[in-house]
Every structure is written in C-alpha cells, then in structure tokens.
Image (cartoon, rainbow, N blue to C red; front, top):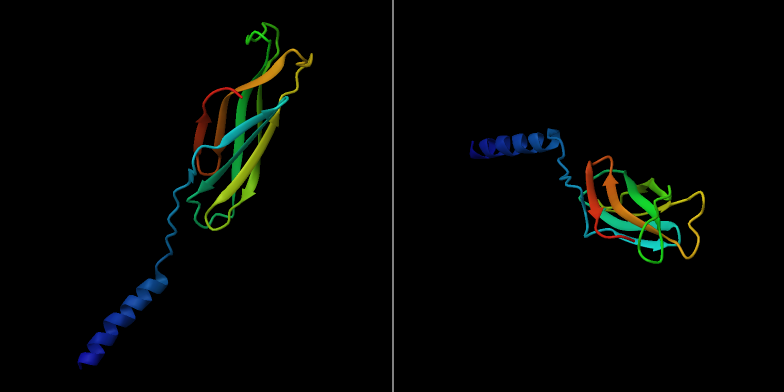
Length: 139
C-alpha cells in the first residue's frame, strides 16, 4: 500500500510539470553601454543585449542629433542641424543579440571642411522590449 501512495504523488507531480507552461525568464537589458564612433558624417553604434529568453530577434533603433561644427567648436545659426535615425532587426541566439546600427547625416549645403559633423543626444532603443539607453557626450 505504501508503494501506491508514493506513486500517486509522483505521477501527479509529473503531470503538473508536463502541463505547466515553461517560464523563460525574460529580463531584457543592454550589456554594458553601447559604443558610438563617428567617421565623417556617419555614426555607428554597436552593442549587446541579453536576457532575451526565447525571442527570435530584436528591433534596435538609434536616434541622434547631428550638426555642423566650425573649427571654433560652435554650430552655425544656419539650418545645418538635423535629427537622424536608423535601425534594424537582429537575431537572438542563446538569449543574446549583438547589434550594429549606422546613421548618416546628409546636409544641404554639405558640411564641408573646415566644418565637421558632430552627433549628440544619441539614444539606443529596443522597440520590442521597451528599453533604451542614452549615450553621453558628443561624437
């Protein structure tokens, strides 16, 4: 009789475990701070996101302000300022995703030497998981 009583609870526990939905812990977060580098009028932002559970992909969006800066470090009063944005969809593997997004500022008239393009207010957002990070400084 003791064996029967032991088997019933074990069978019940097995059935509950089988029917219970699998709970994959999802706690999306950026690993460290994404990096940004400027080359000419292009800004490239790279980073890593983790805590993505069984997601197939993430949508990363980068926004920034761009302006032409003169050799004295000042922006002109001309309309050589603009908002730029770009993004992409990146695959998730083992709950992590690496990403690189490039945005380009195209000014009319162009931002030609001795003027240089400077990016500021850079924000990286995972639009699907609702997380974002602001990158400090100018690039």
